[in-house]
Length: 184
Image (cartoon, one colour):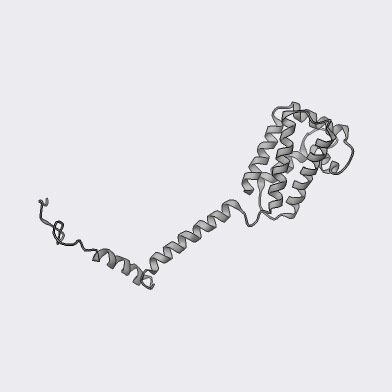
């Protein structure tokens, strides 16, 4: 055990300057091993960290591959479709027209986009297959009704049942929110 005032590894810790030659020698040794100019190793590490951060940002947001039209159309559909959860708007032709138009915008924007989004595809599939029994589905009426001045009674009935069923609209909205989060 060293006593107070004794040298530690050849350096006296109370007198004189503490030398950092060993640390500097290790830094230059890394540069020499990699055949880099002085300070090049630190620059290499900094470049790697900044590029990996940039790549992670691009991967997480998919901002380069996701058209803004898809995101905007999906936001609009969520806002309009959530109105049906609060009140029965199945007999309101203006609401039906807005809902159909927003759904058509979502489907058209997805057709032109090239990006992977399994949650958005799941939403489209479920709306296109709801209800399981019947002549036509919700997706059929939503795509056929866009821009038309008529409201078919089976479409109104599907919307009324969706409003009364307190589980299905939140399920669709949850799928839509997941799809939106995956795109942002």
